[in-house]
Image (cartoon, rainbow, N blue to C red; front, side, top):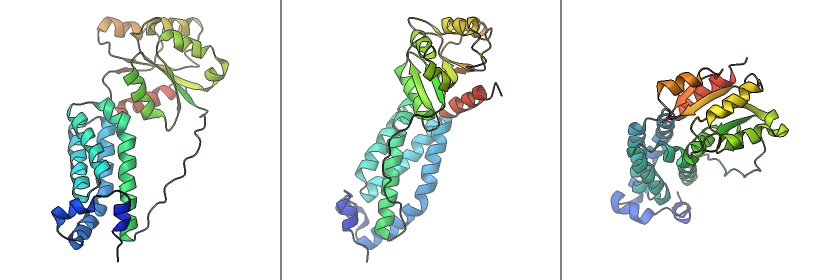
Length: 259
């Protein structure tokens, strides 16, 4: 016998759901279908997020939102709705910034449903202290949105060191402890104080390109600036707007350039 209080105590609006399903037997049988399909749906959401396909991402989170509303998973429904609106507006940066929160809530619901159904489920993980990773990527960009976007993409594998302009980047590179961990640099060109070209000049003067492989991240699309950038021994150029897969591919190419 399933104990509906497992759901109610977790904040599920079962009463509202029964206005649609009519009785618990129908609710439970439909919940079984939800459990069978949810992993595939979450996988598709991840895939579309990684390639920046906001149109199909919006379709999938809309479906997730609808399911969540039907079953009374209010928090998940609200999160999915926000993702639906922002992805329809092609706001890939919002999606990346808030993706973890959506997935965490979805996985929380999946575990709750499994518990209610008497299935094997994962206990909530105990949070551990974040340790400093031995491999770091220096991201230099004056845009808070871009810095946060790249940080979200890379933070699981690297310690992402942030600089808001070229002056701050050069200060970081002068720090022996930080310098020893930095494996690559993603560098914007147009920035206040010290721009990307000035950073490239310093790296060239000090013969640091072999130690710090550099790829450019930029919104610049004029041929003269692009040609000027490639006069330096940079690895690649990533033009804004870019998606998660673009960032990962460029970084992999950058890291492997000196092998």
